[in-house]
Amino acid sequence: MKYRTLPGTGISVSNLALGAMGFGTEADEAGSFAILDRFVEADGNLVDTANVYGGGVSEEVIGRWFANRPADITDRVVLATKARYGTGPDVNEVGSSRRNLDRALNASLRRLGLDNIDLYQLHGWDPLTPIEVTLGFLDDAVRAGKINHIGLSNFTGWQLQLAVSTARAMNLTVPVTLQPQYSLVSREIEFEIIPAAMHNDLGLLPWSPLATGFLSGRIHKDQPAAHDTRAGSGGPMYDHIFANLAAKDQNWATLDTVRDVAEKLGITPSQVAYSWVTNRPGVTAPIIGARTVEQLEQNLAAADIKLDDESTKRLDDVSAPTPNDYPYGPFGTKQRDRYVHSSDQAISELF
Image 1 (spheres, rainbow, N blue to C red):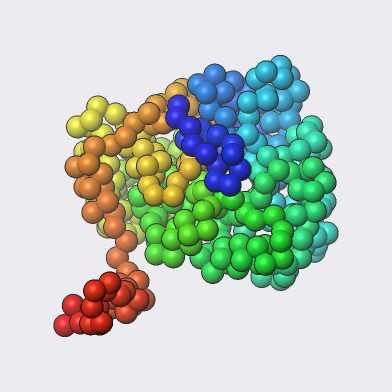
Image 2: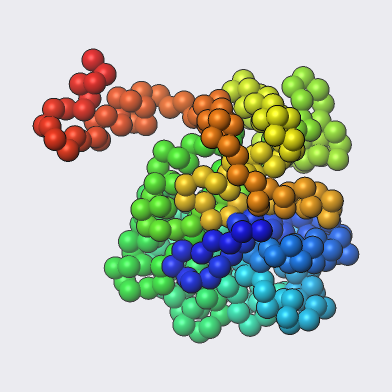
């Protein structure tokens, strides 16, 4: 395992984060404990969950693991959780209002059996709550000692910039991380979101680096997915995700290249996909999932793999997002360009 600094915190975190979304659901409690034990034994320390995972069960499982392990083990963990999405039937049990976040944070602390969370993340943008209200609550929670740092998840570029700029202008706690979807078959965040994050020194914690298993090598075109995969699980969300992925020929070409690179390097397709994301600009740690210790072992190996330049270029080229000419294609980008030694218009290169 390698370590990187969580930007703006002074905290060293493993370059792979353990995602706990399936704790207590896809993996039972004993299995989840074993996965946590092995992750920490392998020198991993960043663990990510959320208050909606399993309806709170994931946090409860992690809390019981903390209670059942000695402090010299649990003190290594840098724990991250999230709130924003609905947790109950009441109309106000959702969003980033002070009311909901206060209740959600206290409930997470109870489930985790902790007094403090290292990284508390907004799980998504809330269009109904002024960002000043949300940031004000988070700053109060930091000052109260309930959380150490704050992060964002699923924010667009302008939403990220507004949150950071507002926090700075109001002298409030500034977000230090962004958790976006990012993989070889989901690269559109490279247009605006990654530049905004890097400009503001927010570390990226990509979720779904395997595209919910599409890049694991177990999915094949024109063949039904196995029942023990998310693609074959029959879950409505996974059905939607895989239908979207399968409809794009570029994604299948990318998967073929992943398999070919894996075969040539003697590693697994998953390790290829994880390594590619891990070593992208701005990435602190992708979030890896595992339903068994055996899956985790294979995924952990990616922490120490750095693809060679030729393999990286093949993957970059085959998976490159293809925008229209404007605003992210050549006609748009050249209008935002400027030469150092000339007053010529950069856009003239296109004509």
